[in-house]
Length: 261
Image (tube, rainbow, N blue to C red):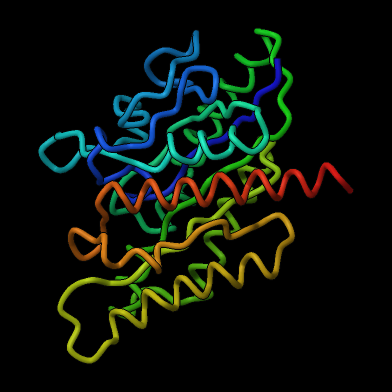
């Protein structure tokens, strides 16, 4: 049996803030969820929200009152799009939290937890006879750093350096590629446009990271989804469906090109 293995990391737009009942369906066999926190002994069909209960002290998506914030996301659309192109299911691992800057993900606690979750998935697939074609990470993160850049608390180079560090420790666990979903617009009061400029700086930095490293790729962007925004940072489900489908198709295309070389 062949399968791809992917860990989904980042902040709220990776967690999902859409309407899960409107998410693109991913039929059983086209994609799976590996629940490293709650049930690391089997695979599950993909049902939204992806990884809703994959929360522990190290990585969770609870708000300050302990309410689970995971809603409609891009994962099922990405998996279904990938499968339609390459006919190989993706086994996905959830590891994201809303409102996090890149420094959160370079912290030792988060590093250990991301590595632990992916390692458990790798070991499960090996024990159960899966042939893993590729191991990769899908990364959607940057709005909080855009806010920090706007306030003068973060630099573009600091953001890029932090992102490289995340990729570096995931590569040590077997990840070969980082696939970035680029951040979108700032969608709130912004009299002089400086907040939007900070968000565009993050998006541009993500493109620069891809240009500088052959194993980092931008595979989709929220920049074309402003009409689907529901608040300053988040989107309705239609955007997550579009972005997931675009990212899945691009990843499939990149791996097809690699295989043809």
